[in-house]
Length: 442
Ligand code: ADP
Image (cartoon, rainbow, N blue to C red; front, side):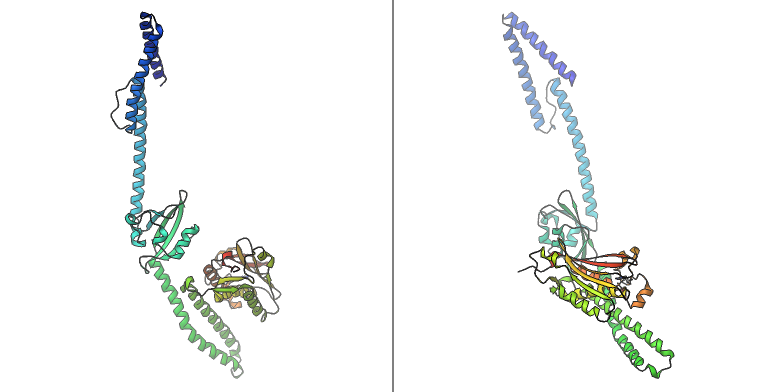
């Protein structure tokens, strides 16, 4: 480029020299110099006009007839344009490639923009959600998939977990939707058909519910006979005393297990929306559980601690505290935690049931100073039939279902369970409910 400038300056100097010579002939060098300058500027303007016309055409037209200076600039621009065009083509190829691969997917893909409108979707989205790109582009996603839990999922923008819903196309089509945020506020929805997994899960649930119900009657008969035998144990040979005692204890345990299984099946099969929700008076509920638990285990002390001062910071809360939820379910969850604390705490143990709130949640905690649990077991404690030590569980008459029930109940109340424990020191089971679940003053 420097040589270009040099060439242009030499050209200008030559033109000025010529103007000077012509001016000297006319006895006025200034006239000659001005004429030379006007000529130079005129040529520059003409070249600039041609260059500008070419540029406005996007640099696609034939190269205009201009001098070397403009021609070099045009060449450089042309090189840049070509480079950009091939990069753009590569990008377009990439976009096409991804679109084609998304189209080929059996899973639905929907892109929702920052205002919740459909930006793009693949063909599977039509089959799974009934969304057609041609007719639905720009439509509000919440208008096409109206399931309240889906709308809540989209709005809450907490996409750590996938969401399972029935398809708006057919109630027998079950979908799992996993959303991911990308760019700034765009949402990518992956929609998977889980109807098969769903029906297998349903079969499993039905099977457990049916077996549990079927076992109820024979168990009642067996327990009844065993109780009669125990009442008349004096008429039997001495060897039967211990055998009947053990059979009776195991049949009671099986009874509890069947009841727990039936209760778990109910929790799994009745959708949260159909569960009867009332304003549950927390303090009364906890006080009832604690006083019932205190009677047969009077040598262990169970203390209820409601930390009122933490609630006073939330002036809008209804008093006494009320939690929106299913009374029976909540009762079973807290009662299971208290019963566990009693089961796994020695005779002199102290169990504390506390209730308080922090900035955005209500906490209900059951703490004991019992035998505690080794850290390796904690992540698996809420699995059905998971036992830390099966001999310990048999001795306490445990079924291995209590914490699974607690977990299910809490999930149905938008709450979570956290467990901390130390062997030999004690355990702490904390239920965290969102504050929005509490009833506000009217
Ligand atoms: P179970 O009917 O056997 O008590 P759960 O599901 O209620 O079944 O509890 C699972 C396991 O967790 C129990 O077998 C027990 O080993 C352990 N566990 C539960 N609560 C406590 C506790 N408070 N202290 C010590 N261990 C506990």
